[in-house]
Length: 396
Image (cartoon, rainbow, N blue to C red; front, side, top):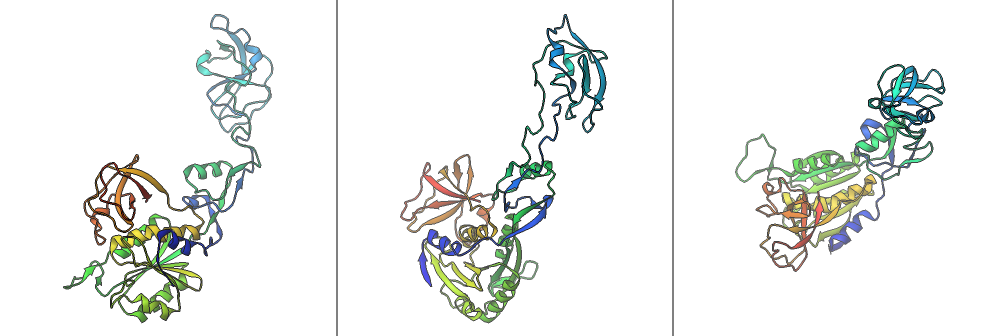
């Protein structure tokens, strides 16, 4: 078992042996936020026919030669076409068709004049000449049948789903997302809504991390167990039987009740590393059981949250075939008064390259995490951070 790894070494030890879980076909409305598993090509031209981009009259540009307000071109209107209509006949010289936005253009025309540039009557008087192709949307102008619509690996947002729907696609192959087990531990924890005896606390980690998993789009199955190695091993086995990965909190340090040192061997798990050189969350532990990952985090709420973002998110992104968490840079608008002998991560609010810090950075505090959208990295050996210090941030 490796110990005292850097963050980068820990992430590599977690992700290197893992691979995406495969793909599944989903109906388009259910694919929002998912990662496309393979390239998508267009089954048809878009638009599938020549069409009008505005309300007006479609005609032959040659019939408008020399047209002006004083000497308009006068044409016979043969029909009116609305979006969804098909033309009944080709356009002949000296004719025009009244046409609405999105309607199919008839054969024989080569331009569309806006209705405000006419008298809007029949016959219609057109007050200006137009070149061929003016106000004319050609078949396949957006894309051609067989062309690449979306490359595999992209996240399916509203625009991507709209693009696929416009191509007549009803289902899409996406990377399968892992089902995640979450096991919180501790005899001191009481479920909210129950009386709170002396010495006990209401647990926040189960809600905090299961909600975060749902925010990220992962299905979570959560449970709680007291400080019994045998009972914890049994709970882990039950969750792993139904899940692709397991995250635990509590019981990973060096105290008498840090029971994962006993529970993981009872389970038969292979421990990969223990302790990561960062603050908070140093005692994070990583194991595998039947090739399924088990990430065990500190029980302190902010420490659990921090190491979830730094370690669990890369793990889950790898299994889901998704992009890794995004890092950025910014400038502190708020000072941080403490030196950082070890690599430290603190909560912050990032906006337009500037970072403000809340009050309160203890690993057990959650109140100051509310409203934050990044973790700020302070390198090992750095002095107190002054306003204007440039830092790296992990965007949440």
